[in-house]
Amino acid sequence: MLHAVAGRKAGRLQSNDGQVSWLAAFRMSEDLLTASVFGRLAYLEGAVLWRILRRTFGSGLPDFRVAELSDITFWPVWDDSAETNGTVEPDVFLDFKLGDPAISMRMIVEAKFGTYPTQHANQWVRQWTAYREANGDDGNRVVLAAIGGLGKNVEVNRQSYRCLPIECAYLRDWPCYPCFD
Image (cartoon, rainbow, N blue to C red):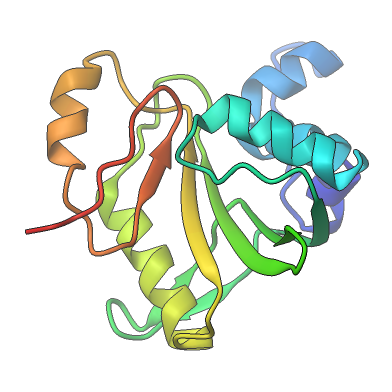
């Protein structure tokens, strides 16, 4: 949660009686929940964290026994000049060194709380494009992890997100659908 406060994501929570319990606070703030979960996950040994991510997102993530979390950034701000002349702000950006010899794998995390607000392919594309504009083809493998907000009708959402101009979208409980068209 300290990451949410430091990242100016904690905000102010309104309540009718002026008091908000911690449980209610986490139910009201997607950013508090994201910071708390990923902030704690970052303390794990790299190989354990990687195993958890593989179990969460499936076999689309490569299987490595040697893994090190090199860096974690909450709400990085990337220029989005190609689309809106603004910025994009993924929820979490993870940088891993995997295997021996090590390869770099980066993960852009977009988390939504519950089913609303929903994930949107255009937000993923903007984040992906902003990352590529800032880093070019830096030789790192980069994946997108969309957590929550996938909606009630998963099959319809699968089809609408099937072909994105990104290498692959790893979605909780979804297989990977790279664009081959």
